[in-house]
Image (cartoon, rainbow, N blue to C red; front, side, top):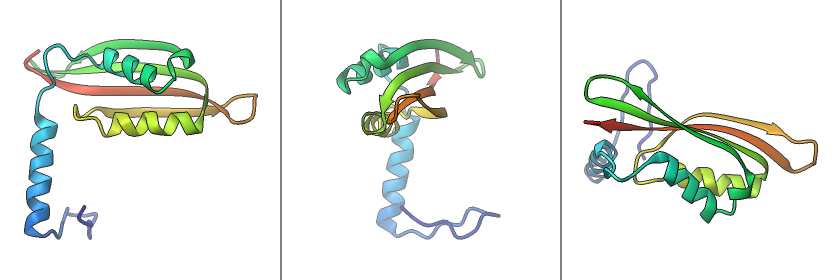
Amino acid sequence: LPKVFSTEELKVETTEDEKFIIIDRVKELLKNPPANFTLFSYLDNLATRNNLKQNIDFLRPSNKQLSDEVSLEIVDLRLKAVRLGKLMPFLAKIESSEFAISIDRLTIRTEKEPGLLDVDLTCSIVRKGQ
């Protein structure tokens, strides 16, 4: 992706092809996920597929109304005693999801047992017209 050359004002140098790629990606991110999509189920299924289901301490969904037509679907997740090698692919799949999931908060603590981590994660997704 293009490089930003100024922190005062966002200035981006791109080729024409890069501009179209960026525009297409922004359009994708602004799409509303399907009505049957829930962030809770997505994260639960993703944890299962990544062999992290046994590490889930809790998975708590909530919603926050941002305006009359826009809401934020939020899920707080705690993973216990997880190895970094299992955590990183899980986080990468969340970040690269087609549903524009945001990782809003990530706290990682070491466990007493070497190589194991406790992880608190807050993810969200914007919903329009909900």
